[in-house]
Length: 188
Image 1 (tube, rainbow, N blue to C red):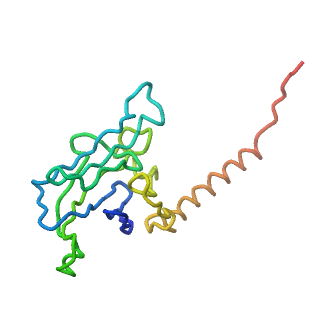
Image 2 (image 1 turned 60 degrees about the vertical axis):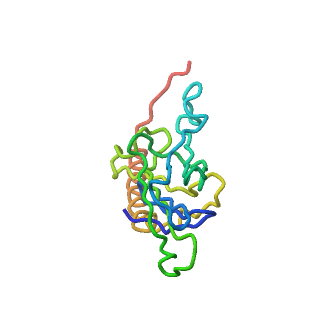
Image 3 (image 1 turned 120 degrees about the vertical axis):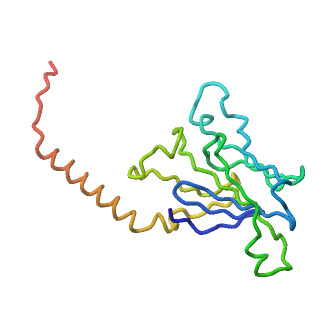
């Protein structure tokens, strides 16, 4: 998987590849894993009433708190896989802190989540050949959108293959139309 460049927003940095989204939340110096609570909180709309496109795959909130103080508590822009192993996280030194020791914040909470395509229960069961990839425009609702067309993994090598498949399918369709025989319909 080729990761897309990291994008910075207020209080966090994020990146994505075809299957996962990684959010790095800024944390104060000295932050330790045992002092953190990281969780996905289901959307209040999830599971209410009849399943629909709106609530079936409602994105959860990502909550990160340090000793009871919230570092982030925001609704994700898109749904992610949920369940026991849906979230992987770690605390690490900030790369900026290594370059500039006096700069804060010096720690990052790095959270990895698996993408979910709305309407599908498990993205990992889809064959990669299907080409079904959901590129996120933003990680949290309300964040500034990115240009997903500029993501390197979406570029030419993938587009050329899709274009060739489309041209072949279009040629086959034209051939079928040319060979079709008229059918008389009695309307009387």
